[in-house]
Length: 211
Length: 202
Image 1 (cartoon, rainbow over the protein chains, first blue to last red):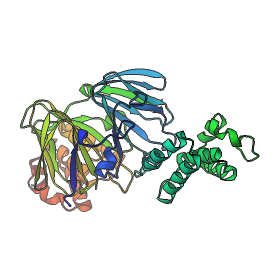
Image 2: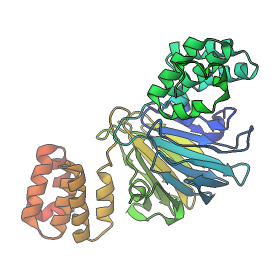
Image 3: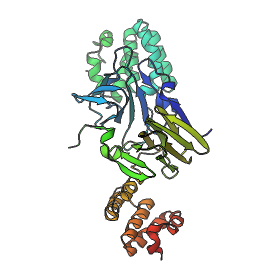
Image 4: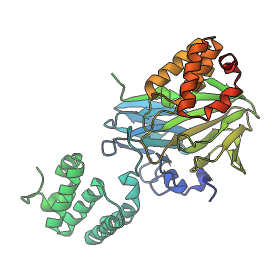
């Protein structure tokens, strides 16, 4: 082993949501780093999100092309070479491309802690396999995939929340309530999300459903 | 009040000359990023340095270099790498000696770094890179700031001694040099051939 690795960005296969998994491809363990291209499904570059779950600071760099960011409700014109640093994990941030071939590099980590791989990244493979089953209404099979993911080291509140959704729709009420409880214990924001999530309609009136 | 986000163009970043045409464009410090190191480096001409020769043995950082403009030639230990725009170079082993030379005008490299095993702290070199780009008086003040933030760091003490040596403050320089060597004896050898410290060691 030489102790170093190199790649051209275009050599790293983009996943179907426009994600170029730089960190995973190179085996980086010290910080989060990824690149994002226009997503086929909705044309976005960066899905509007916050970092409350990870408490990450995030740096965005427009590597190629031209994007429009929306951060904390403000619209930011971002041609190539623009740096957007989002310090506050609670701020909602997202980006859409102005030019179709735009690439954004992102880097992130939590101040004061050594980096650990984010839940969304380590769970990606399981969610990728489970969601088509969910869309085909094969809820028990979708739940089985996420359970397999948890057994293989996946986890975190988001994965438990998704499993709760699938179990609710599969009619496994007690298990769904338990998974939802775990999700909310890990990330209180899931309590609010669950209130309006139609996946929980089958169990919404159960005594154990979170208020 | 700290702003929840900040925006800048890479062209707006400070330009701090380092050596052999290499310019440091501070990103981490501009935004006070605390989770990892991140900076840009630019070189105006082919043949200029774009990454100075160094290892990361002291900080034990993993480093990622991204060629965002132009073309660079990296030397990584005994290996050579042609790196056009869009190349990512990840150096996992901190002990690998690394260096890069610009091969096109205006080559720009983004660099990220941190240790995988411990929380990130701003690297001491940030202070001494800037100190040497300023007058000795300003440089000494910058290194004092670094010591206030990083505590007794041998490299910061050493470079403060150099600034004080330039200013003729022999006693202060001697005290800081002695403490740097006490903390890390490797600085002794460098001091013996450092022109800034000639009067201090006389």
